[in-house]
Image 1 (cartoon, rainbow, N blue to C red):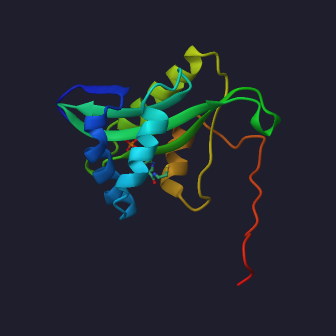
Image 2: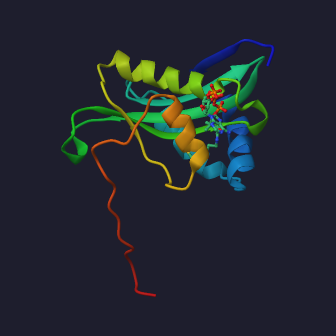
Length: 151
Ligand SMILES: CC(C)(COP(=O)(O)OP(=O)(O)OC[C@H]1O[C@@H](n2cnc3c(N)ncnc32)[C@H](O)[C@@H]1OP(=O)(O)O)[C@@H](O)C(=O)NCCC(=O)NCCS
């Protein structure tokens, strides 16, 4: 990557690139979903909801989405990382680190002192990434149960 890397708030014009990037990773073209995410995280947010993109030479290389949630699960304000994705062609050049740093900085600006995420146990790539950023197993554990009609 020769052009300078910049992390900034998403703009509506970035959505096609975000949708395409997500589709390369998940195999799903979820245009309606991304419009909803843009409305929830990309507009306003009062410094608590963030949808950031990393760009270089006007090309979107990745995105991160996160939010400050307070007093849920009985916990003081905490910055959640909900999603992070980097274009497979731009990986291992510091883009993911820059996105997470951008989100962390925005959480710190509003006084948050803990950043948290959830990940699939078998996703070693995302685990290696978060570990490289200094994140370790936290004090909370997720619990779940399948609900709905018995199969
Ligand atoms: C995880 C991800 C965001 C990392 O982005 P990236 O731009 O490649 O990350 P960086 O270049 O900043 O890498 C930072 C560190 O992460 C770790 N890392 C990154 N890619 C790795 C890989 N393929 N294998 C092992 N460790 C890796 C390394 O420790 C790396 O530090 P190093 O470069 O000094 O070795 C990117 O691989 C991605 O988008 N993966 C798919 C994410 C996904 O599944 N998202 C859906 C769930 S939210």
